Amino acid sequence: MASVVRNPSNGNKYLCAVIDKSILVMEWFNPRSTFVEVKRVEVSSMPSPVYNFDLVCNRDQSLPTVCLGVYKTSDPNRFRLHMIDLNSEEIKAPAFPFSPEDSLPIVKVAHIDYSVLMLCFQDHAKFVDFRGNVCNNRQNISQIPFDTHVASVVCLRDGILAFHPFGLRGFGFDGQLTQDINDPQHIYQLLGSDKNIVVESRPIDDPMSKSNLYLLFGHENSY
Image (tube, rainbow, N blue to C red; front, side):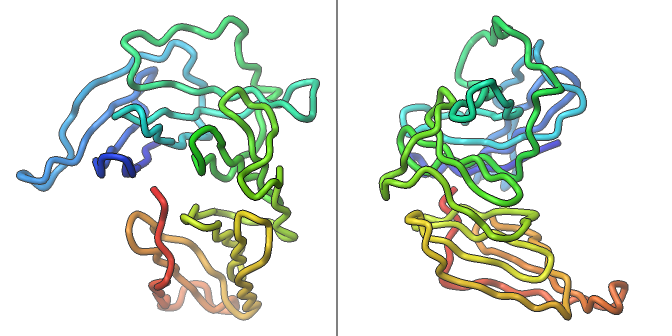
């Protein structure tokens, strides 16, 4: 499993990948037009299999932090976050192991503010601090209901795009619906969102036919 992120503070782009019980960290090197390895981080608590591998950037650090999973607790207003700080020289094992039975299905984890993360589930998004406590964002809300089941999410500077099989829904960080595309005649899939947001569609009655590709203009991925 691998993921790419661009640090908004310094503009550097990183590619991170899971290799056995380690994380390979690579940085984009312009003179060679390729990613170059900068370090490997051993993670004794690496889950198997790895279902979540989201990268979040902190403006005070050069390398990203990896979220390997989100886990429920007895408190509905608190989650356990399996975070690996790639800037650390040594990754210590957690005091309390992460139980697979407590693992939650997450679509995406995104860093939207200095101290706020957004946990995107299939039907809603929750805002939490880095300790996993539910909190309010700058717009003073703690969650955004999607009112549908989504397969992927793109985080923008002013909101999110939540993609479902028949289109997408856009939301501001105040929870207001900003865009709603629902086309039951086609199946939609997000292909990429590094710089340009690329979406593929195929007719629902002929999924093996040639696909249409769309570039969504007017939206910029925040990371």
